[in-house]
Image (cartoon, rainbow, N blue to C red; front, side):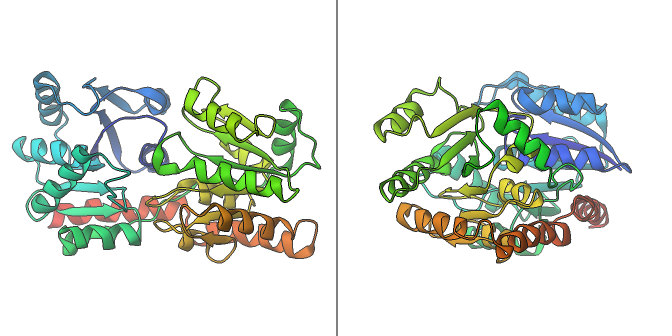
Length: 375
C-alpha cells in the first residue's frame, strides 16, 4: 500500500515517535510523511530511512492558505491508497482535504485521553469536538492509542463503530537491558553505580506535572532519602527559567540533573533504578514501556493506559498527589538488592515483550489500512 501520513509536527513527542517506529519497521508498504509545521526532531530521522518528508511550515495553531493549497496538491500528487492522519488538527485538515482530493480511505489517529480544559487549549478542544461530529463522515477507521482514549472519545461523540484500539509497539532489540550503557551514562554525570537514581523522560509542559515529582523528591529528602533525579526531554535544561527556579526554591539543585533532549534514551533508562512518571494526563505513555523493556521498574500516575502498561510490575498512584508518589517511590526502592527486585525487573521487561511488540503494532495498522479500503 502507498500510505500518506499527515501529522501536526515532527517534534519530540509520543505520536511522532510511534509514526517513526511504524514506518521504520513496516517493510511491506510505501510511506510518505507531511508535517503541517516543520521537521524538528523526526524529520531528519525519517529522511535517513529514505522516507519522503514534506514540511508545510505553517505557524503552530494557525492555518495558512498557502499551506492548505500545498497539502491538497501533495495528496493529489501522491495519490495514496490510504491517508493516515495523526492528532486532532491533522485529522481535521488532512481528512477534509483528502476527501476533496478524491481519497476516501482515511484513517484518523487519536493520541489524547483527557481533554481537561486546565491542560488542553480551547482551540484543541474545539477541534476535537468538531472532529467528533465529522467522525461519521470523514474517516473510514479511527486508530486510538489506548482503551481509555477509546472510552473518552466515544463519550465525546466519536463514532464507536469506526474506532479501534492499537497499542504502541517497541523495538525490543533497541530497548533492552544494557548495564554497560547505564554505567557509562552515570560515569559521564559523575554518578557512582551505588547511588540511587530515579528519572522522568518527558518534555516540559503542564500536562507532565513535573512539579508533583519535584515535591515528592522534597518530601523524601525531609525523610532522609536524598535521591538523584534525571529529567530528560525538550526544554528540560538550564535555559528553562521556570523549571530551574522551581528546583532552586525546593533546594534541590544538587539533586536534579537537567539533561535536555537526548538521542540515547535506552541508555538513560538503563541508568535509572526507577522511572517515575508524574503526568496529570496521558494516552498511552511510551516512556513507561521503554523503561520496562530495559528492565527498569516504574512508578506512575493512574492516567490513560498507564496501569495496563505496568501490568502489576510497578506502583500506580493518583495524579497530583506528591505524598502518594513519594510513598510509592520509597516503597519500591526498599526492594533493591533482593531477589524480589530482580524478579520485578525481569517481569517488567517480559510484560512488554509479551504484549507490546513492534511487530504487533505494525500488523494492527496494516489491518486497519486494509479494512479502510474495503469499507
